Image (cartoon, rainbow, N blue to C red; front, side, top):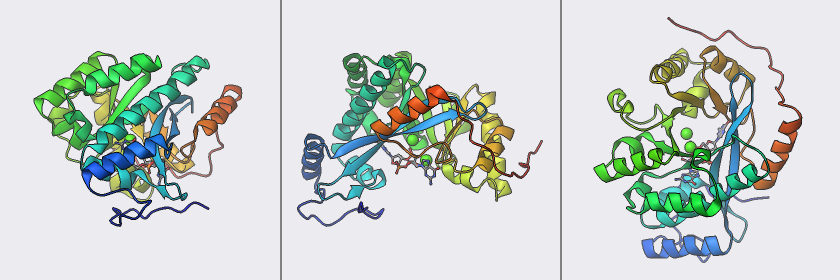
Length: 294
Ligand code: C2E
Ligand code: CA
Ligand code: CA
């Protein structure tokens, strides 16, 4: 049975707990990489209507040597407090691109990998070269990589960071605006950032069936995105009913436990093998009629 650390910042500094000073934490992340304590899981995304696989999101996991799993909600914010985020971010990108290049070599085309990029990674003046270097090294075409940035990361940027995003976009890497609706998106700036899709945060998706306001928000975000020629991804889709609502609102892509939990590399291979036989639509359960307005 795996132990999981609660979703609070670790403060103790025992032999197996990540160090809290910045230099210490950088060393701890380096060690974790050497000892293969870090891994990625991949959560599939699919077309809301056809259920066709459209990609995977890479999510980081840290397993301490005693078996405790540290969730990314704990170690990513710790890394973001200092330089460790650059090490972690580079490891994540390389591991995700290596995996996606493997899918491509196995003949699975049109299945890009999405990687979460922390706002702090945009402070790194070497970021663009690092990302392009990793693509070259792993043999992954730029079109098969998406970078997910939160609203804060996308909008509170220096001119250099904005330039970096434009260069990445210019190289053919697509950007997704993550956790949409939870930050402070300005509709005016939305037109000026180089994103191709908005990802609606799971809090709205999960509230949507019970709460008319949440439903109205999801419907409005889809309409807004489409008016701006952006695709829309709904995250945290857990039920057939939520999928039905997303179909009614013409959302493009879904991700969530309804389709699949995040999968290990072996789990991805099984998932892909099953999919090549059946593009399996799960039976939809009994459903209510989604509220629509306008
Ligand atoms: P996120 O980018 O919003 O990722 C979605 C989170 O929702 C993931 O949690 C995923 O496992 C979870 N999830 C997916 N489907 C469902 C569902 O149907 N129901 C529910 N309740 N949850 C679902 P996870 O893996 O714990 O990641 C948490 C956050 O940590 C991510 O949120 C992301 O912000 C961050 N993160 C994860 N990996 C990385 C990484 O490599 N780099 C950076 N910078 N951040 C990361
Ligand atoms: Ca994400
Ligand atoms: Ca989210």
